Length: 278
Ligand SMILES: [Zn+2]
Image 1 (cartoon, helix red, strand yellow):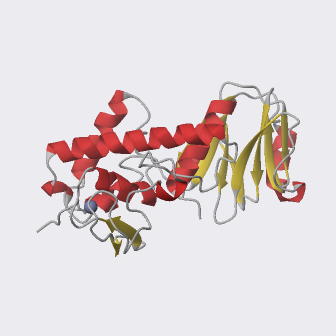
Image 2 (tube, rainbow, N blue to C red):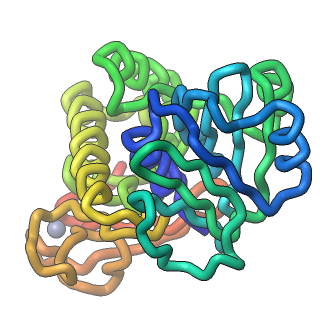
């Protein structure tokens, strides 16, 4: 399953390529989408925005039409220059949105539906999202306010809550807390203001760096190489994530892992660099 932050990066990349452009071609293998395209064509509409909400990816088109896809296990969006050869067979194509220079192709997405602003608002399965950390300054103030409001919860769980801030997945959760020396099981109410500042700042810089990385490649929803350490060796790109039992890159202590929160997500930390709550 692609992580929330993978879908987030996919949406950002799609947005950079598609936003403000007029759709020159639309194709799909989903009959309900085709029938809407027949009566109210997608071609000729302008792509207004691409956004992620948790595991959902939304492409807003002019004329009150929103294409919503869910990736589940197998789906991915790719971006190609016009005429470029696809890296997946055509039979795996589910949706194509082409603009003048690019085409965005959804392969194997199991769920794709059109909504209007109103029907989208009514659909409770598609979550409303917290502020985008790569957005405005206001967004980061808002993220801080929402984070602090979860005072009785463990910080690692709050970082995964997409209504607190959008885009941070399970990998960055552990990496951000390591970078700030914060034990993942500490309650939000026990954090010092400087620690909260650090968490918000690192979350933003990690997301930013990895959005840039993704622009070099065009396969926008693959796991990608998330990187937080700045090491050029791809084997050394993360501090703690999936490094249980290995030596801390900073102090040499043994990295720990424990399941945490809803969905028992894996959390990694260094017991020396991130002293416990006690
Ligand atoms: Zn350490």
